Structure formats: structure tokens, C-alpha cells
Image (cartoon, rainbow, N blue to C red):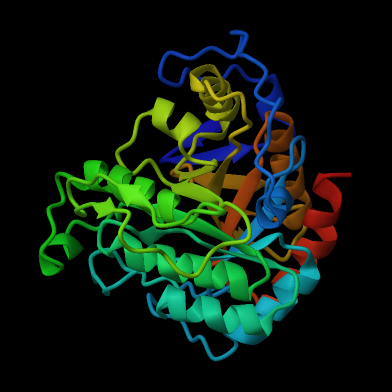
Length: 352
């Protein structure tokens, strides 16, 4: 591996033979308890997260838009259909309330909850997820209502991803405090979890930030199965919380040499005996030459050919990575070409 100016050159199968740097004093040599004895049973979750497999999700608007922070979304529905045919396991929607020129990106630009309804009707089998709804800027009861509604209308194809937000400029606009977002995130999480359990009736909840429920009112609609909930980013939480409260954890900016250390640490901190899978996000620029070598910038921006990317992600799968969320923003090629090539040269190969 050669590193220059935050650019990492990763030749084929370089990771498997390298010693990874430590992650919070973890060691890949440590024995972790068996976390496979009990798994979450949910059709969407079990398709997106499969042990010993690496699945791929696609972040809206499902195409490249390298030269603008605000993408054209007129083809969003058609691209969702192409992604479904290509074998992606899930479509992820981001939650960006306002355009901050200093940040430079608005995701798909559309409200994610409204868009969930559109994609529920537009697609047939692909799962839908949020990556993630900013629970500290939305009331958790409204979020639970939207999540339960989407789960029912989609035929249990929905996974709720929550975050605490990473743009400090938004908090005063919403009259919220940025410094206590980690605490409010946990309470919002607990309230949503309470409301989206199967067979919950006239729930009770003791809250500090969002008041309390005394069992005098009920929550509608009822979900068919406990709703899977994924932490998008750290949201100010420690590893113990992520390893036990979140059904899965998707991070970003991950040094690929620390993947196994992170997974081992999650297993070490887990105490409920259930598998809590780990994934991460990559911005991806897919080059025309399928054998163009993989380059990694700032641990998040991958550039390379489809064959090289397949080798890279195959290595990550063997280290225990469960899911990759692909953001095609830096890609310059037509989206239909990119999705077809990913289907043929990456998705079809990584797990074979």
C-alpha cells in the first residue's frame, strides 16, 4: 500500500495480508463470543444483512452528479427499477432538510418520507431504507408513524435508519441544541422502538426530551413484525450501545484495514447473543476500464474499475463486512451503464 496526499493505492488482495491498525484498543486476535445464536427475523433485514455475504445498497438519486450539489431527479423512478433488476438489496434515502453551500450536497433533494411512498409503489421486491432520518430534528412519534406506514404499504420491505445529523448549521434553525443530540437520539430511538414493536398496545414510555406516554392512548398502525432499526453513523453513541441497541450499524469514513477490528469489537461488546451486522458507505467513481486499480481517498471515496472494485469488496467480505452502501455521486458515466456493469461485474461475483 502506498499513501500520498490522502490517496491510498490498494492493489489486488492487499488488505488480507496487511496488519490493520487498532480500533479502540481492539485486537483481531481476541476471541469474541458467538453472536450467531439468535438473529432478527424480518424479511427486509434478512435480505439486506446475511451472514458470510456482502450485500449492496444504492443511495438516491441512484446516479452520478459530480458537478452539482443538487441532482436532477426526473429519472429517479426509472433508476430505482434498474437498481432492482441489477440485484441491489436495498435503496437508501438520505435526509437533508436544507442546502448548506459549505457542505455541498443535498442527497436526492426530495423529502425522504414522501419519496418512500413513491418508491413503495414504483418497485416490487427491492427493500427500502433511510440513511438516515434525522431523529433529533423530527418528532419520534411522527417518525414511528411514517415508518410503520411504510412497512405495511411496502409489504415489510422497509428498514428504518436513524441518525443524529452532522450539519451543525441546521440545529439553531430548528431551535434544537446540537450539544445534547446524542442523548436525544437515544431517547427518540427508544420511543420509536417502543411504538414499532409487534403487538404493542397502549404503550407506556418515560421520557425526558419527548415527554411520556401513560398508556392512555394507542399507536396506529400496528406493524406485522418488529421494525428493524439501523444506526447510520455513530450519532454520538459508544460501541456498547451500537453493539446491542442497533439491529445493524452502517458507518462512513472507515479505514478498510480496520474492518475486522471493528467487527470483533462489536462482537466483544455485544451481550444479547444476537448478530449485529456492520456495514459502511462509499462514494464510488466507476471508471470505464474494468481493470483500473482501486484508489481510496479519505477512507470514503473509491475510484476504480468494476473488476478491481469486486476484488476489493471481496476482501472486505472475507473480513466480515456485511453491507456496502454505494453513492455514485462522483461517477461521470451514464447511470444505466454503471448499474448494469455493477450487476454483471460486482454483485454477481462478490458472493460466488
